Amino acid sequence: MSFISPVLPFIIFAGVLVLGDLLSGTWAAVKRGEKLHSRGFRRTVEKMVFYFIAILLSEGMKVVFMPHVPVTYIVALAIAITEFKSNIENIETITGINIYRFIRDRIEPYLKDPKDGKEK
Figure 1 (tube, rainbow, N blue to C red):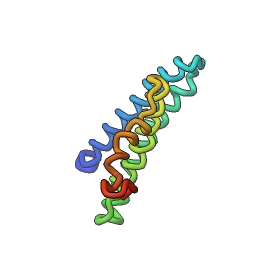
Figure 2: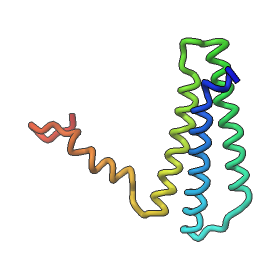
Figure 3: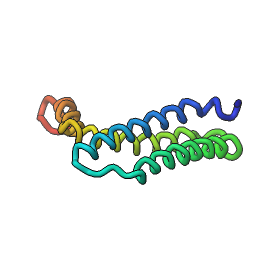
Figure 4: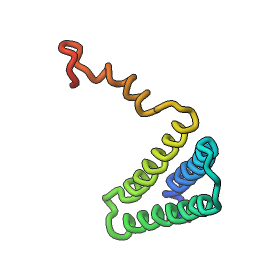
């Protein structure tokens, strides 16, 4: 338990992201009129298992070989970014709103220099 407890938040969040991807991906596929296949659901189980293994292995690498390198954070971040992006793409399909463009349009005015209007 002492080995798993430090990485439990990573494992839980990866699980939440994968389940979110399952739900949003299923909904997006239905919206696109695609047929649902068991292969897609099997892929969700595979991702959960192998993401958990990757997180545990990265913690092992950190503990045994690289105690000063945040290996677990790096691996968990890569997994989280991948799944987050997939969730956002599915949500865009479902809602019809381009979330990345929406955010960019709201942030862009703040990135320009008020003196000359050019990006900082």
